[in-house]
Image 1 (cartoon, rainbow, N blue to C red):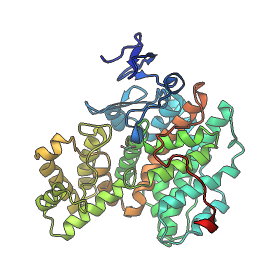
Image 2 (cartoon, protein in one colour):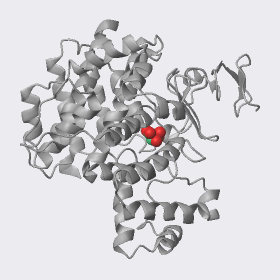
Image 3 (cartoon, helix red, strand yellow):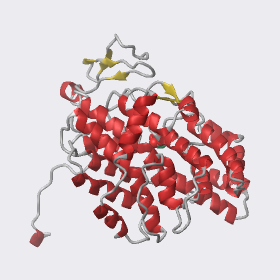
Image 4 (cartoon, helix red, strand yellow):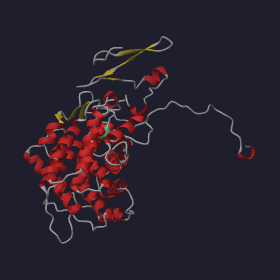
Length: 434
Ligand code: MLT
């Protein structure tokens, strides 16, 4: 079978010699897709694809990734250009509405988001009701779910203006919620938003302000955090985005769908990986900083030692986001006058791994999670909060996908099939006779 092009259906020959024509869904860039949606009805078989590694459940015009070449673009714009020259607010606008805003549009959009920064007291009390041992991602998920009743736009089948209002409400409130979670975890009173500040600086103020002392914004930290949010803003059909789409496909509200996405992101194989990387680097440091011996143990493959932050389902090259984070980590640490042993260890680990055929032949290159934690640490965030920061960055991507899914006439409730591997029919025996 040759690579399908847009015009040629693919003929599938079954074991009995019968043939089925599979239409081809064309792509503007990258691989086309075989439309197997009628396969079950026509041939009585389903496709088997654990982890959906080879399944496109939708068309999407938001993000393009070429994993072989290490390319990432949002709405056609290279991630490098956006990270360097666009603010997070511009990128949110781009993802949600398809275009970068003009200066006037940007000012109106930012003011709309800031207008939603206040969070209902009941939701703040809910956050405070969690034990301080709780993981912040469970607080974030609960708080987002709890916001739904305060929005008159959180309805099944929302109109386009309700979708935009939902997006602004949620994106406007998320920094306040995330900062409140940090304060609760660190035993400090929650700080209210100050909408005269930009969202990222205000998030840092709400997170780190100490009572009695005026907050001194640090432009280096605000700029770096804004850029990290840009890098995290979307990554096509990753696990959490697919979760958001799947939950949303049942016409659950945006708040319910995003809450589910937060739960999906919390796992160590997804957003929780940035925390796991720091824990791994701390273990290496605690064991005397012997990177070569750590790499050796990873290769021995006993399963007790894992190389976190390396490898990616889609990238078979260096994750382009990791390149940017690595450069930024070095510059920001220098600018902040901080020296983090973990950055040195991370760089040594990368060097040792990338000069070893074991990792190169398996396409195990650093991914976005490898260096982000080092930056978050330098900014003063505790390890537990790293995944919350990922969620703040990813929220616009989730919402953009939710909106795209809602507008797509081909959207159906998500309902995969299975290959049944249980018992054949057997006779029921009452409990008295078992
Ligand atoms: C992400 O940014 O969501 C991660 O790199 C995971 C993925 O894309 O599968």
